[in-house]
Amino acid sequence: MTIEAIGLDDRIAEQFLRSGVGWGGSCFPKDVAAIRAAAREEGYEPAVLEAAVAVNERQPERLVDLLATHVDLEGARIAVLGLAFKPQTDDIRNSRAIPVIERLQDRGAEIVAYDPVAVEPMQERFPELEYTASAADALDGSDGAVVVTDWDEFAALDEAFETMSNLVVVDGRRIVERREGITYEGLTW
Image 1: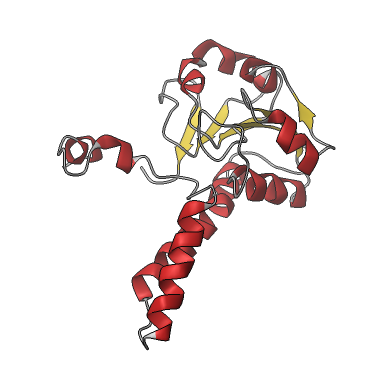
Image 2 (image 1 turned 90 degrees about the vertical axis):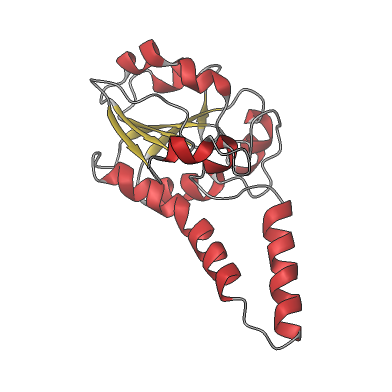
């Protein structure tokens, strides 16, 4: 049974099967922390919730590790696509792009970033990065790309990938279609 078949069950639905870089935003981490604290106050150790937190916190590092299996990150130009914690917002609170950028910087990568609406708030956090006016501009000449936010426009970048120096895409949100000619990796599929 494939993941697509599971998504056909309306009790589950496909949108809940697009996991990847981990949860972002302020709600899930805060709510899970509150439930964990309440459980401990009652003398219960919430092992499943602890595992959920650990998996979600590890995903940005896994994304960068997957990229590093195909690209020597030291001095590499890496396109980071998506800076907001989710599409349709400029909110970067707990955005998974933040730890991805930090890990790429730790490994010596040169980062070029794009988001349709969240560039300005991310510039306040990372003023040293190069920001572009489009995803295609970010991809142009890059040695690799990571997709952090699932903006619809990223699904339509097919020709833009051809301008990359090295066609390596690590998709953290299952939005880019796998195709011949691109080294494609995903976190959970």
